Image (tube, helix red, strand yellow):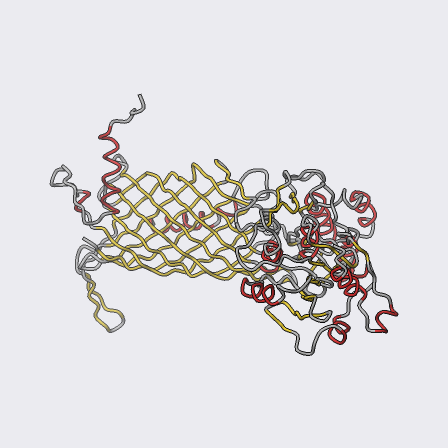
Length: 337
Length: 293
C-alpha cells in the first residue's frame, strides 16, 4: 500500500509541470498567426520611424483579408505581403513550402558584371586568396580586390599576403558590389589594416521596449589598428544596390575613414541586425531589431550613398566597360583623392 | 556585532561538508554507540547513465514546445545515514529536440549542465526504524545551451538558473533481513539478505534567480565588432520558479557498493515581464555507487 502511495505522489509530480507551465500556444488559426506576427513586429521591429511606416494602418488593411477559411498558401501570401511593406531585406517569412523576401537589388539598376571585369580588367591568372579575388590592373599601378561575401573567414594570412603584394601600388579598388553581407566581424578584420589609431566609425542601438522609439543608448563601434601588414595608399570602395547588410555596415564605417572613398551606387541598406522567431503554426520569421547611425547621427537604413555616383549603362555593358572601375582608376592615377 | 551565529554552530554545518568533499579526513565526532556516527558513514562515488526526456519552450522566440531525448551522465559524491544526507552531483545532458506542429518540423539540440548540492537533516519526531523523514536545503545551478538553426539570427540561446530549494525526503528501509527461498516455476531461488532503501525527495524553489536574454533577445556585439555571448543578457534575482523531485531505489551489495535506480523530475521557469523560458526533465537513471572509505 505504501508503495502505491509513493507511486501516486510520483504521478502527481509528473503532472506538476502542467500546473507550472502555460498551456500549449500552438495554433493554425489564420487570425492567431496574423495577430502574433503583427504584434511581434509592432513591439520589436526597429525601423518604423526611419521608414515612416504606419504599422497600425497596415494592420487594418491586412486584417480584413484574414478569415478562417484561408489555406496555408493563401495565409503565407498575405503575411509575406504584409512583411514586405517594411521594404527590408532582413525580413523573411519561412515555411515548409516557401520563403518570402524583399529584393533590395531591384531598387536600383544592375551595376555589376564580374564577367566584364574578368574579360577586360583582370589577367587570366588572377589570384584567389581565401574569400578574395585580386590582381594588378591599370598597368600594375592599381590593385583590384573583389570581395563577394562577408564569409567570416577573412584571415590575417590572407590580408597579409594581399596587402604585401600590392604595397607599392598607387591605390586599391575594393569591390563589394553585389555582396549580400554575412559576418560583420570581417569588417573589423579588414579595416584594421587601414587605420593608425583606434577609430570610432559608427554607433548602434537596439530595441529595449515595445514602443517604436524605445531603444538602448547608442553604443560605439571602433576599429582598432592591426599590428600586421598595413596599406597606406588611397582606397576606393565600389558599392551598388546589391551591397547589403554587412556590406552597408562596411560602407558606413568607411565614411569615418578619410583615406577611403565610396564610388558607384547607393548600397542596399540593411543596417539593422535581424532576429528570428517562430509563429504559432511553426513558420519562422525574422526582422531588424537595431539601428545603426553614422557619427553625425544620420540613419542610412535605406542605403549608404556613395561619395561619387557612377551607374553602369547598357552601352557600357555592350562595350565591355565597367565605368565604376574606370572612375576609380582615374581617381587614383590622377591623385584626385 | 557581525558575528551573530556562534562559531560552533557554523562548525556543525561546515564539518560534514568538508568531510564530504575531502573523503580522507575523519573528524572525531562524539556520539553514543547506539546511533550511527556521521563520520563513520561511508562516502559513495556515483557514476551512472540516464535517459533525460525533456521539453522546453522559449516564448521569446516561439510559443511552441520542443520535445527531446538526452543522454544524462551523473557524477556524485554521496554520504547518507539515518541522521543526515549530503549529496553533491554534477549531471551533464546532451541531446536532440524537435518541434512538430502540422506540417512543420523543426529540429534543435541542447546541452544542459546541472550542479546540485543537497544537505538534509532527520526530523526526529517523525522518524522511526523503518521510515525516515528529513528536511533541509538543495542548491542547484543549471546552465543550458540551445541551438536551433531555424530561428535564424536567434539560433543560439543560453540560460542559467540558480535555485536554493527547501527539501523534504522520506526513506523507507526495505531491506531483506533474512534469506528468502522460493521456486520460480521449477527453479529454486535463494535471495540473500540485502540492504535496500527506497527514497523520495521533493525540492521546492525558495530563492530563484536566472540569467536570461533581455528584451531584444540578442545583443549587438557582432555589429560592433565585439566578441561576447552574453551581450544584452540580464540577471534576474528572485524571479521564476523551480520544483523537482526524485525517487531512488538503492540496492546494496555485500561490500557496501550499491546500485541505484532513479527517476528524477525537474522543472524550472523564468519570471518577470519578459517572455518566459520553461523547461522540464524526466530522467530515468541507473548508477553504480562505489564506497570510497
